[in-house]
Length: 137
Image 1: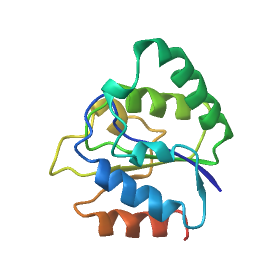
Image 2: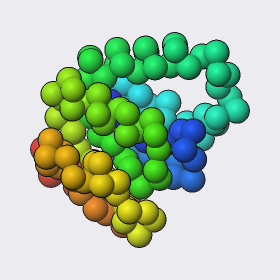
Image 3: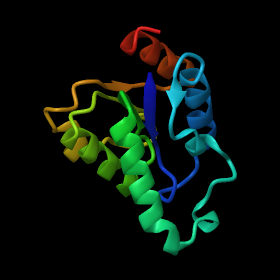
């Protein structure tokens, strides 16, 4: 299965180690198209603004190719919100993981009927168990 993993880049990289662990888990039996999200060296400063159109177009193409979208939403991110809306537009299945001890999930996400698989977690182990149950791994 091809998975589009969405998580904060420009909104902040505080949770990059969590992203990496989730991506590594998902990559065991699947192909994560956006595995660069878990790269600790990826930052706002490593991307130039002239790359924005390329990044957007590449990511939309990956999302079109994906069988599933997994979004980690604990660190609020405009990009992740956009990606979730686009996933809805494409009618892609979506799993949302959110650590509510870190932030409150946006009402625009939580209040959208399309997003049925929204899960709260506190530890990476809990998030992995949620993924195991949700995608039958």
